Image 1 (cartoon, rainbow, N blue to C red):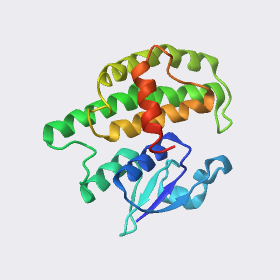
Image 2: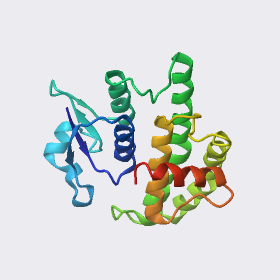
Image 3: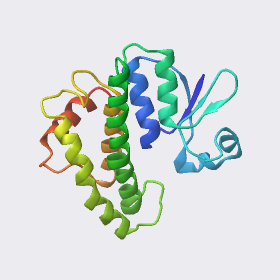
Length: 197
């Protein structure tokens, strides 16, 4: 297998965090978004959407969605479990991870690219402001989940932690950090970032 990635971007980052948590080693190839390599014919042949990460399988086929890559690798390497320990735990973990993806990660991505895009996209203050208004909803749910917990789902890291770390780390490109009224998130970031950043 081979992973085509751009670690500074949030979706490749969350796959990278997952791989480190699991201790999985995969050959990686950098696709430099700052040089437009995601739009090269070679990369578009792997993934017509021009995104990363892309996992090339041993049969020459590709997985092009970060969550699909993570779930495939979890099937191959079930220990330690990062998508839950039984069917209900897996459903709950996926449920929380998707909530973080849609209500934190995607909002952070939109904010960063509308405010100070590392890819040089033009600023869009209206979109940036709209995402700042919406982010507290997602942050609030994560803040509540972290009350009394070391990790988002309790006492062990899961894909939800990987997704949240990818969001918060990407937000730092544009100076976006959770406000002081999210002490659980900020304390979690200080602890969890030490594992990866």
